[in-house]
Image 1 (cartoon, one colour):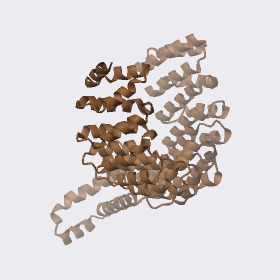
Image 2 (tube, rainbow, N blue to C red):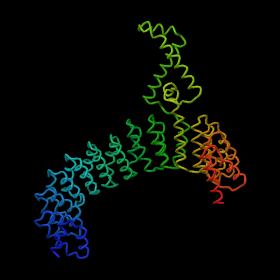
Image 3 (cartoon, rainbow, N blue to C red):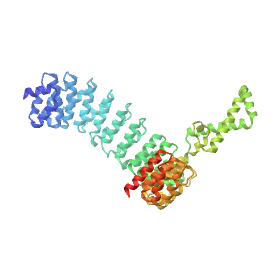
Image 4 (cartoon, rainbow, N blue to C red):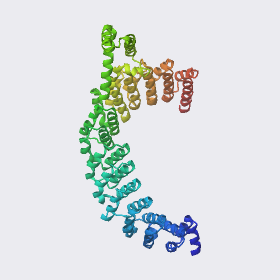
Length: 532
């Protein structure tokens, strides 16, 4: 048996060795004996097998393996360190010897040591000091694994949190992330760690910020006062992190939600977006505050936008001056001794004014030049933000009178994209609401094709409840816009009413000039026939 086991270890047949041990645990002692074998491969594989056995390897295995932590062969030293970690807490007697290897020149050995200590150690002063030193190692992999191991020590390792906080400023993002995870791993009751985590919301790396947000969320309610204090922080990413964490906590306190809702008027678009997401995550309690913010929407222009607007205004003013009073152009060119380009500059000014007027009148911009000429778009940020708020209500998905009536009211907006989002949102919250159904029917006659399209789509989402809208949907099957016809056809199939009027209307769409309208008609008829 001994010779056979030796052969298996030499050939690295680990699976067969473990299989035999499972049937006869006395073989463990034979494997321990083979650790002293003169053949390097047998020593290595014996140590590996004992590690795979975990606690079953026993204390005798720990004593034997520990002797090889100073083996001349660096790979044996590394495997010994790894196996002791796999064996776990019963290998605590090897901690002092493992500590000696934290100065080993081989990176993989130092990494194996700090990783194993996380599996072996309790939150003793000895272990904490060893791993704290690992946070200062010159290799990022060692620092990262040291942080992870500290996180495994639990709440009793609270004293190491300041050191982990320093590591959250490590040049390497994997170390910073591991440090944040470690603070989380130390426990949800680490309230004193909150200020450190709050400061880390300003980290340059988004991955670290995300980890910090998760950690704050895990700590829970005690973080709320700290988060509220930084809602007006000068740094955008800090405000974003605070509002996102509050959303994850799903606070329901109206006073807290009201403070959060103030960021819906933040000067940064990303902060406003995060705030809308957070309120949507909180759900129904946030709806009154979203509606209130909608009615008071005023988005301050940021520096970049204000500067752009100012520049455009100057260009327009100069163009108007030169166009309406050409002598002023001659005067300036004469001063600058550039009079020979008069015709060119005058032509540019005239063209600018003409293009500006065209884009302003037709309210359409189809190429990038319009973004520079049509600067009054910069002042439309408030209306665009209203779309975000309506969308948030749709994301909450509460089918109650207050939000439904609010969204219905927005169908009368002069801005097409507000009407479009309102129509889309009613498809999410308008189920069982007769008022929503009537409002959508009216909106099927909207002057904008994309609004009519979204309205038809929403009626389809309401399903059989939208049966009263069937005549209106049949009416828009002749719409000039193919997408409107397509969505109306789909909606009739989803409402699923088998009448001659519906089937005849759908059959007429099978020969539509648009392929996907034809396909939608076929599918709608099949759906009605199969489910009625």
